[in-house]
Length: 412
Image (cartoon, rainbow, N blue to C red; front, top):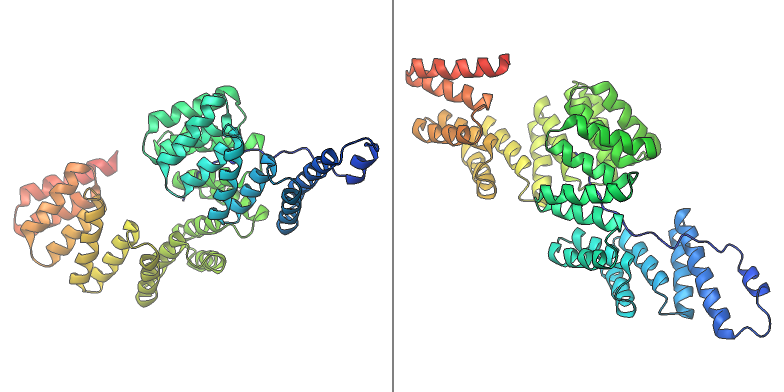
């Protein structure tokens, strides 16, 4: 699994570590209101410092104390919003961001952070409006350019995404998040060498960036360089032993390498941390399925679908388990659910064709295979299964042509 991410705006980042110094620097003529303002600022800065050391509860207390003195301090409101957002309290975070923008509609970092909250919530139109407002104020805001690019990427606008990333990197060539996300785009587009270069640039700047380590590891895994991928995953787990995505990806690597016991241990570690991680549940189900533990695999697949009924990968895998178990009717229902979501899913078309073939409905099976081959003429599994159908039906010349196509593709 590849991870992409956005960036929240910078916190204030200027820490006043000695409150007494504020008072010593003032004299009796300093207005009380000014001293109060200084105190509120110092409390906010101290909260920022505590965030940096992971003392979240203590930081929240500091922000609350600062806001009790100065309820309209936009930096404290914004930073408190980020804390709440990070903690998953989206409604409370949104309220903080809205308070900031009611006071200062042009507060660029809050426009970014509020946009990112809306993006995570799936409200792309509202998020885009926030990013556009931010860029109208500061066209060179690298974080907004990156986050806007991420939104466009998720919306499938790849060219526009790339343009945003390139704008950002022209301003700040060392922006790690943008480098990493641009790497993901290139990787998805099949430009593996260019993606690798982006990941390497990011890691030269921040060798401990866990998201890039994960994504680079997954690129190496897909390329078959298991040893190098494993090294990336191990680096992440040395930094964060509870990184669920890495535990799942490392488990997948071990599974593909045939080390089922070690893979299972990774999946179990991940599910202790997040019992509802659908990718880990699905991959663990595949391991159990492969090992012949069909009842346990069935349970894993059902857990995934209880969380995400439209998870097409699990619907396919569960359907195939049911097919192998002889429950053709339920398997067919799974395949139909996938095709209602994605009518061009080549694997499902092939698996559904196989089910129909086994049920003796050669005409319907042939139609499925032909649909799949229109989408991907080089899908060797569909070609092979279609060849088997033609062979069984006595169309030997056509069957031979299918088998020859499989051979030619695999010989390339």
